[in-house]
Length: 411
Image (cartoon, rainbow, N blue to C red; front, side):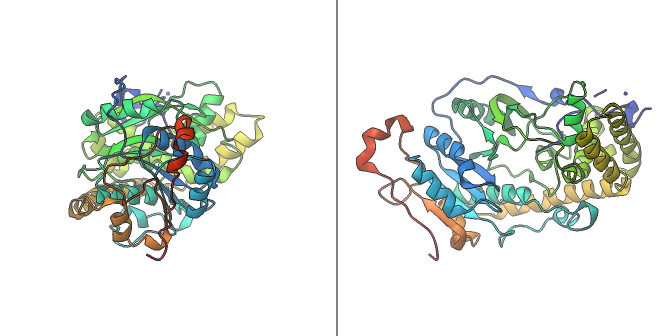
């Protein structure tokens, strides 16, 4: 989920001639010790894929002895997810919620209404799900949660413990994404045509603290996770450690993907370019975007010239360039000003939210009881601190302690 990375060739903002190739200078790369007592309080998956895509996350939750929270929509169904996990013998606390729209009590954000229709309208609900997850986690009393996409695997569960060990000194910790690079269509084209193209941390494998009240939220825009890492002063302290693997997909098969990414990719890359020159406030001015849009369109045109003969890539790049010419400088500045105001709205909402309700209380508070399916692997009421079973290799010794299923429907 992101257009991760750009460096490099007529001059744009700050003399910049091309999108930056990477943004690694904004990150702390660190190897944390595997501290046994460290772990996320929950693994959270905003899912839109079939139930089988949640099995890996459930296995991680089992191994780490931590709950799994799934926010489901589209092909994902809460009851099917819980049943699939049960059928595969995975022993973990699972909370799955069917999300059909923004629940009550979520703060109204200006950025959420900017691109609801027209050429920049967005139908994806991943930003809303992640924001809802932050609020549910805070209401439940969790301190730190791991966002994990349903097409990403973490080969070594200990990497989540290592990330947790770094979180006390960072605003977020992301895993290195291997497998399919976490890039936009334009950046994928750049890499496949032989340019060096980096990646950045993203919400697909990101550990975040829940109790922060600095206004960090996921705006309704592509590259929403990049904006989550920013505030008015620049990028928050972010580390990268460990490894995750994203499943392969063809980035060029659907030109609508490139169209849908172009505004968010332009905004995020433009902001990070401004940040690299130490002038983030420049991005609030339309004049900055006049120059950066020239940089962006020149890049896409140059890639198109080099992509001759690669039909699907050419079609996707033409789609991105066509959408780029609909982006006006004042729209970019307008979004960033709305984003700044929304940080204050989000901050007030977080500060006003009471904590320590437990996940059942959090679900009730946000009016989600009718949509939630919960499977607990305990014999009594759920305590605040999870007491889950050991990893699946020990299941044979636990036949007498089979998990019971609790479906919270109409309660």
